[in-house]
Image (cartoon, rainbow, N blue to C red; front, side, top):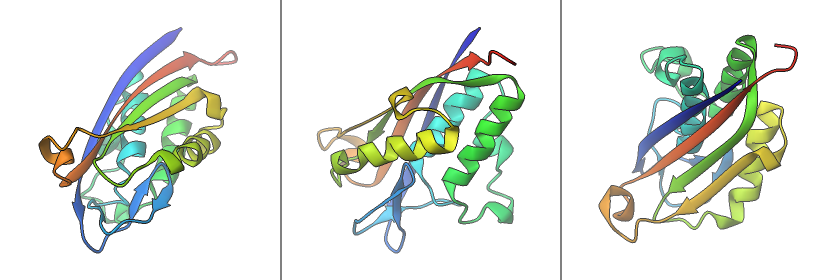
Length: 161
């Protein structure tokens, strides 16, 4: 059995914050603002996985009203989402994600993002696609006010699940 989910996330850019995408810290003059480390890519991936199984979203599992998640490492939260999915009998078939950012250029970091996500989820990097695009200087991402990400996850019923 297959289940498909879509995830979307957006965070504002702010001074004094680190820019972390796919578990990679990217040198930049601003970072993403959020309760956790604001890894917009990983947040979209988690929402896609949870959505595929009709398990809500990351705000349900990791509410921003809970101080224990302040500054949380999103890769650790992703590990928890993977465990939740496994407990429901599913694993990743594949994930396709797109980061929308006017800057910085993300191409040099994409291979490591894919590897990081695959390592945490216990799958192969070939099952994880990460792409990056700009919005040609249009909208809030084009004006460098924030970064957004979309993800689609195909979750597959585990053979022994």
